[in-house]
Length: 181
Ligand code: HEC
Ligand code: HEC
Image 1 (cartoon, protein in one colour):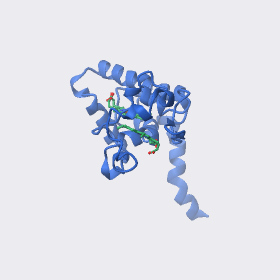
Image 2 (tube, helix red, strand yellow):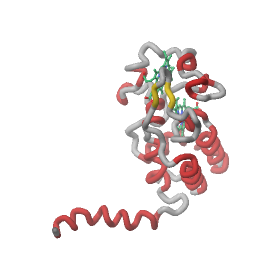
Image 3 (cartoon, helix red, strand yellow):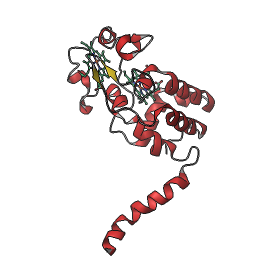
Image 4 (cartoon, protein in one colour):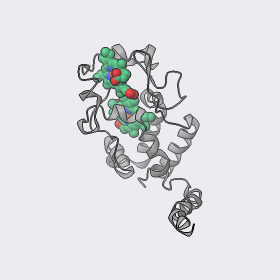
């Protein structure tokens, strides 16, 4: 019995302390957004050309690599995108398996944050995360077609919590200066 309490004590402590540290900008990336960024709906596309992450370019999509053909299958009827050509993938973004810190740094690097004011980068991150059709496709319930794939397939691992929670957490992150903690 005593052994059990000792074993679970650290976990209990975390549960008790977690709400205390959920203030704006405080670990909001690592605790709240990171698990969402690591959902399969996001990473499967970001991992597309990553051999070590079992990217689709090396499996089911080996013969579907022509970027001009992506929207032929992932067409507007499937994705709901106004501009179906926005369905594409590219390497050099964050991938699955990265730590919270790596994920966050990589995102800022992709946006060339180093050369931009805090305000500009916050505005760009918000624009991307609130309006990019690919991001909305990955969030449960964000659009009617979120998670839809060609041939009546579906990605089931979507970002949970819906748009309200997503909006709140992204704003906490940008308001807190996009900290990578
Ligand atoms: C269909 C493929 C695809 C899906 C699905 C996708 N992304 Fe992306 N993402 C991209 C591409 C390609 C870029 C490169 C930049 C661009 O084209 O705007 C990108 C860029 C990004 C960036 C960097 C910001 C920028 O403007 O470069 C972030 C952050 C990001 N995606 C987050 C997400 C999240 C979170 C999800 C899931 C909710 C997601 N992505 C789903 C393809 C995708
Ligand atoms: C011949 C039709 C076809 C073409 C062309 C095609 N896809 Fe797909 N795509 C599919 C189908 C079907 C699926 C469902 C799962 C699978 O087969 O891998 C899929 C799944 C995906 C997924 C998500 C997988 C998941 O499980 O969530 C991504 C990301 C993706 N495709 C990106 C692309 C990109 C980027 C291109 C162009 C470079 C492309 N696809 C070209 C048919 C196609």
